[in-house]
Image (cartoon, rainbow over all chains, first blue to last red; front, side, top):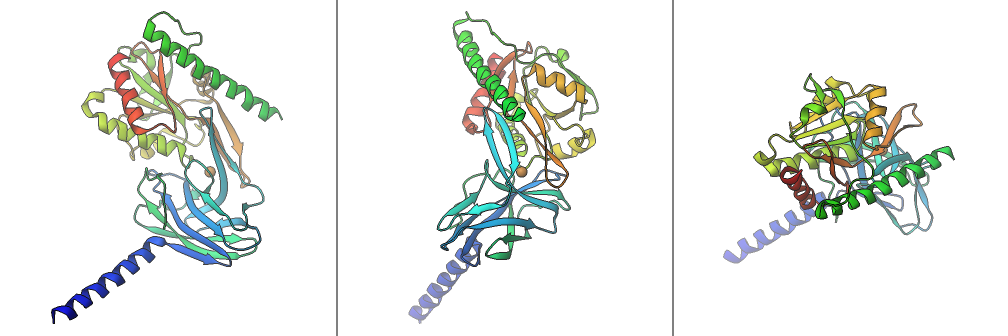
Length: 160
Length: 197
Ligand SMILES: [Cu+2]
């Protein structure tokens, strides 16, 4: 009897672990691209813009490009580059789309490339998610969810 | 081309300022060297508190000032957030420390809007909104770079200096907090400002 109960507990734990790892992974696949852990730091009260971060891995043999991002929560979204040099922050649109080279991972992350959500229609609040559609030149469109994390979560995300 | 030249020139200014800052800092240690370039100077600007902040009235209290705008995806919210958490750690030690957030985008950043934006941060952070002329003036005295960059949707964004300037109780330049600096470093620098500034 005790043995059976142990097995049930073990199975339950395995299933729970599996579910939570899947939930944590928060991955998407489209064509030969894998998109990992899209997230947004919660913007301040009333903010009209927010930054989106994610990792895109191209498992294919040809380069692809992220050409557009759309979402209901923002009037406009663009892929931006950003750098801080000699104390000056500058930001620029990445023209012609962000290249995702074959066999490589491109990271949109803090202090670097980001999705810039502009003209926000609603404030993304922490612990919620919002949908967005990424369109790639070759892989086509994919709808993903950005997870809103507390402000200040600019730390590295390992996104399993 | 002109833009690249401008950026290069400003980069030169910032680099030399960093050098001067170090020189000045070392000078403070020995008490011999005088600063070559002054950073900062008096300002009188409309504040989110509903008052006008006159820097000459701040004599006797060190303060911090930085420049940004609310249509800023990351650097400005992060700077505000980090400043808030450092102020939180300092607690009562910094209860009178004034921190000013000066918008480089007064066109979109009204005082009301800034006020609501700043409710997400430590209440010691006060927003200042210069007119276009006042902005040019304060940017000049603080050697701050800002430029408007048009975006393809017809809007614009701003590039700007992302340093936090620490000013001593005489209103003189004391040092900076840099964007990528570790939290412990920021805390140490602010403690020094409060003690020695
Ligand atoms: Cu941006």
